[in-house]
Length: 423
Image (cartoon, rainbow, N blue to C red; front, side):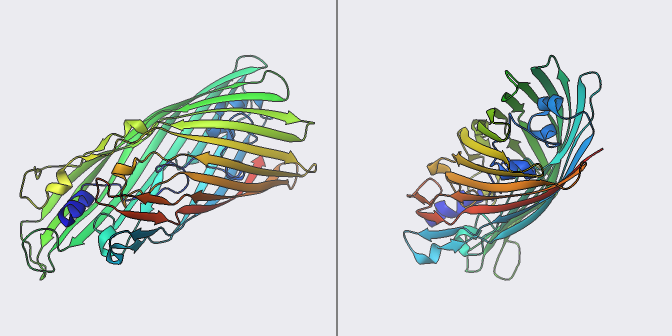
């Protein structure tokens, strides 16, 4: 059993936990989207329209707009209690992140509008300190930055379409270490991996916005899948004895792996009551089913029986499933200057029980959010949004990765503070 646990643990790359949504996707990318729990597809209200539904740029006021915001994300520690022995228990580190966000919308040019967003569509990190979890997850951090220019065209007073490019840059760090791997060697033997790689990729997004009446809006968006083909120029694989001497020669060369940022389709419909209160219902599907395996490649072949680096070179089965999120957001104009917002969502996770590991102990979740925006002057407004992402406990019974225990306490707090300026 110990051999199965350690070898399977080393076969994974994505030692990670999401900041917000299922898998490692981050849906909320602005003050309004955080405050509304992501129910922000049909009724978009500011420069962040450029990201969440660029077709709705056609309905914005005829002026240039920009939003600058700062997101703070707190990932809670995850507790793992093993059913077999307390010596296999663990607690992941609590994580803190600060992310600057930018959204811009141009004025109208003969029914054309231009938009731009700086966002973070995916990202993850997870670190464990105890021996059993640390075998697969000493550290993995993936940072994904997106530059998203877009253009919309108002085809008539009720219908608009839009398209854009997704320019993604990703940077990843992978570290894993296990002492006393399952080989007949003296105590203190260490098997480790250390990589740092990056990737630059391109995708696209499409959108439409329909307004059957002045108070009713419908929005549909699609963001394409983008494969992040990460390359590490100085990958390090080591197998050392207790004195730090190599048992087999160290590997110090190129490492490659492809990680998907999955396609997402979102549909929303909103209705405004009495010119003050807007209710939006939204659904989005993340196409995680394209994430069927993870295959790390090197300039040498280690995938043969008896080699200590075999587990690093063996493809890891994922077989993730598509995940759905159902959202509701309410916007209420309290006064001419202050608008309040709140939201709720039910989110399913993509990770099947048999493949779950310390890399991604994901589970179904509920999301609660609240926020508001204050119109400080004719051209300037300030806003804040907060959400709490509460993940359910998940009990795994002796799965393919040798895990037999319960994960509890997962979740996230997120706060976004932003300013909007019209020019």
